[in-house]
Amino acid sequence: MAASSSASFCFTKRRRLKASISAPTGFVHSIHTTFDQETERYVDLPPQWESLIVQPGDDRQRPRPIVEGEEPSDAEVWTFLEALGPIPDDEFVEYRASVVNLGSVDVREYGGRGLSAAPSEFTMRSLSYYADNTLTRRGARSREDPPARLSHEEFRMALQSVVSRRADAALRELCSFVKIGEGSTGIVCTAFDRRMRRTVAVKRMDLRKQQRRELLFNEVVIMRDYPHVNIVKVFDTYVVQDELWVVMEYMDGSALTDIVTRTRMNEEQIASVCKACLRALAYLHSQGVIHRDIKSDSILLSSKGQIKLSDFGFCARVAPEIPKRRSLVGTPYWMAPEVISRLPYGPEVDIWSLGIMVIEMADGEPPYFNEPPLQAMRKLRDLPAPTFRDLASIPPRLQSFNDRALVRDPMQRATAFELLQHPFLNQAKANGAFLPLLKNVRHSVC
Ligand code: ATP
Ligand code: MG
Image 1 (cartoon, rainbow, N blue to C red):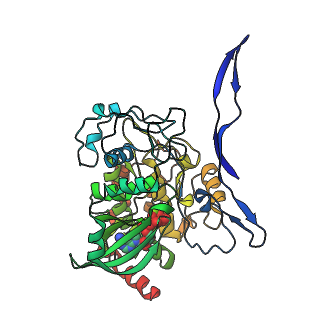
Image 2: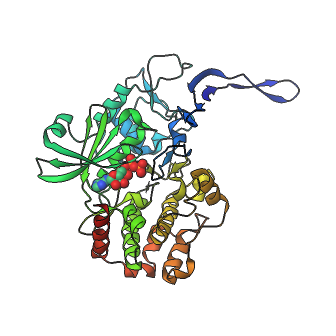
């Protein structure tokens, strides 16, 4: 069904300059999707499409994020560079399409691990981004050859060099795994950490089964480098065989999704979630990090009532050198109109998604949830900003708060800092606000 190819362009001078476009060259038939008449299902869909097409028999209960390629962030470039080590003269890392000017970015500031050489001393000649969005490494080939994709083993080694500990420590110290969750990147288990004598959550992601495997670096780097009281803590990271393991604090309450779908939240509880989430976002945005997947599934609660943001798998960095992102990333019903419209976007997208999450907390689900994902995305792109299902029942302070978040024009939308000043948040309570709800949810799960 889909294939990748390239075409070359040249101009010939006759009377006027006229573009002559060659036939596609280097045609590769990489994806072959068919339709099975018997099961009425598409077979071998590209992973990016799986979250958009609802197939008969799909038992998926929660919508999955979609991820489309884009140029890598500086942090992604940095982690790869660091992982690859000094690059011999006859080799260089190349991305195609958009050039990342390393000369203007001091890569030493990322990750806090320090490179021995200054960026200008790199033997790297060019950085551009590849169509399949995977870092590529060119050996001593001719420049015309398409650069090879990093092999699985090379990628594994790159990831291996940024994780905090060796695989044998994980196998020795972690035991009693019980699966507690599943997402688009892998599974999450509780496990007992014998060394620290505590229960932890372990997110296990298969390197071979990712829509964009380079995003796995986010899972290692972001929670490690941006500690905050409202962000889930990461203790250790490992590469175990073909999996990345992220060992985190276990949030033993539930995901906010369980609460919004099973109980009714009061104003105080909604304000408490908003305040915790906005504090995390204000911090991340000040550091140039966009989460890109804010939704109730990404908010986790502890039995003590702590409220924390998690799941940084899809985040991106912005910096003065790359102030905007472009790719279609996020979960359809929560996506900001500018993302769907394919406009360059920044941290404002998280504020829109927070506004949608507020609707989830009041109505139990996001707007257009009974429509297929593509239809919902079209409506979010084309219609006025959505609002609560029963507006009359929503307290005015909450309405006015969300009116500042769900603004179609990102320039007019409130920032995380501005929303933190909104009077609606005066009702937020530290921790305690959730304890009665957690009991209800637990009761209904058992
Ligand atoms: P998605 O496709 O929605 O982005 P994902 O593959 O990135 O999912 P997560 O959202 O990180 O995975 O985790 C999946 C689920 O596992 C969460 O919704 C939550 O229920 C559970 N979970 C994740 N981290 C923790 C944690 N630290 N403590 C307790 N439960 C957790
Ligand atoms: Mg995720």
